[in-house]
Length: 142
Image 1 (tube, one colour):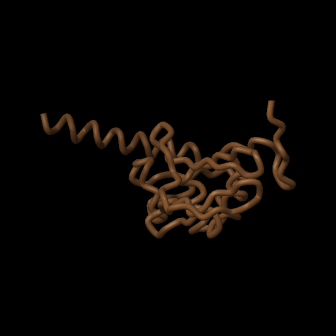
Image 2: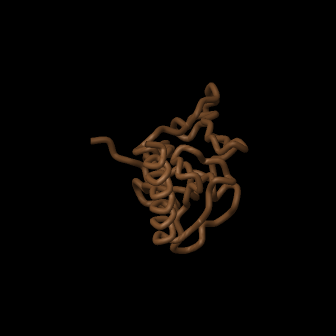
């Protein structure tokens, strides 16, 4: 089994938490770029601590409709949710106990203007309100 080398400021395998997001944001401009439309682009890779430029390509992949980014730093795989790091990049810290809501409910739409911090209960209400409107509209057309 391959032994992982620890990174000084993180525990092994941070997945989708604040620490992982902070690590990701350190590599904006080095390994990644974020454009004004909320797309994340990979511009380089890192091998044995050396940054190697690569062809610019989208860094996100889909997981249950949400876009995510994964990368390796010194043998440690790091996963982040794209909408959370895009919010932090454009708007700053996420308020305590808040989650990032997609205003239009399209999980892949990470335009900075489409992201907002809200409570979990408000997020559930937002989804129900939108779903109820959709059900009403679709039943009226029959």
